[in-house]
Image (cartoon, helix red, strand yellow):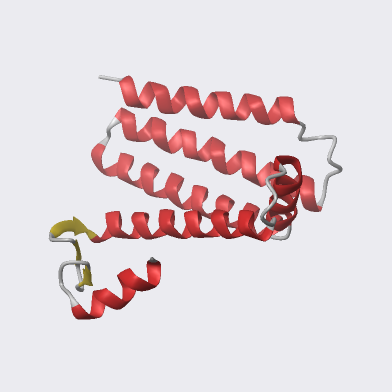
Length: 158
């Protein structure tokens, strides 16, 4: 199916045409960022479906999840670094936007992503320096509660 869409992209303008600043998907004009988010979601779907396909044709949920967990475990350290770098970047962008706009909502979102970056920094330290007993699940849950509370406040603040 994916090959069919890609092959028709070169022959028919109604399927997928990518210009320098905008993408057209079946005649609907989209922003390039939205198109990139869609491609990332498509990659996630393909990755997860291929991971489950590796598990075989038998539907044994416990065995399938074990194999997916092992596959994800191979990329654990890289995933932690990527999430940490992205969260620091988003926090920096949000706090810089706050300095220009002085919007309290943007400041709160910046603090939420700062806590998110801090959580992933501690997770990286747990994997590399500290024993696994320091940054436990209850501490991680507190960080997640703070992040969700800050995002909730920023979303519903007037």
